[in-house]
Length: 443
Picture: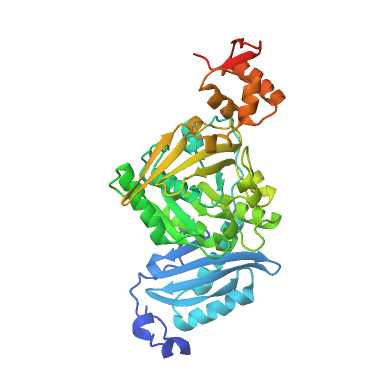
């Protein structure tokens, strides 16, 4: 069977004649085209007929009042022969594409192939997640966390902090751990090794590669972790289709968004921006997500206690696990001390986590855990429970002393001591010289 002559003037003008588009080696045609090979990569649908050397792709779909539209690209052999918008349910729209393709090669069953692409494509694009039966299955620690006590698997995790507090550095360190499968000092060993996709709105590839090289040197890692990088400029919701395809293509297991505010587009503190961006993150299903966020000026200047991330309350509501990051660094110091405070947990208790110290040397960054109780600038942001435990680590104290130390009211401290005593976290000791009850940690 010989292919028809080139019928489109633009292809002829481009120098694509019968030698390129006709005479392609093919197996004898059956009665009607066979079922194509089908591949679903994120938002990209790919249909391939190997015997006919034809491939069709549907990308960038959207549903509107006029139906389901997508970009259709068609390749014949090694040549791209069509690209354009197509209304999948419109017969005139499909017939226009068939006419063009038949003018390029009249020997192929374009109408039957395009009907299959549009019908099967519409079904796949509209299907969404399947309805499944909910079963009573407990999640073990291995199933719940990608990195134990830090990143909840297949959920949206949030780190928020003031600028310069080390949240991006901490995110790169977590990426190194997840991408290498090796635990870093102060960061637990991941439950599995995954490929990481780092979406960066704030810095550049060279800066992150420098951090990666120094963290690897500090941890003694020789094999580079599997971390992919993409510089971002458009709002995340506008880039979701492409990113979902890349996640599927590269089998990504952890996505890091650095950071939420520029990724939200216009009016990032509004409800629409928060819901749109967090929903876009959630659409990366089957993947662990880590978003980095800033805090307001008032929160950054707050000297004690917990704060909230910048933006709408829906940032807080839609993230599943939230950590406040506080940094402390003296002038001319090569050390950055970072406190991690678990502010929100869904479906589990809130976690305690050791503070970390980054030590910067010319060719490496050393990371190790430190005692939060020994960091006055950080411990004041801990929960009241953590502050009481840190204070009692230095010796017995009365409720009045603890109230002075933590800045909380005496009634709040007394209530917390009673609750901690019931759990066996603290013990009641003898009275001091003024007859006030003293408290301490169990021996």
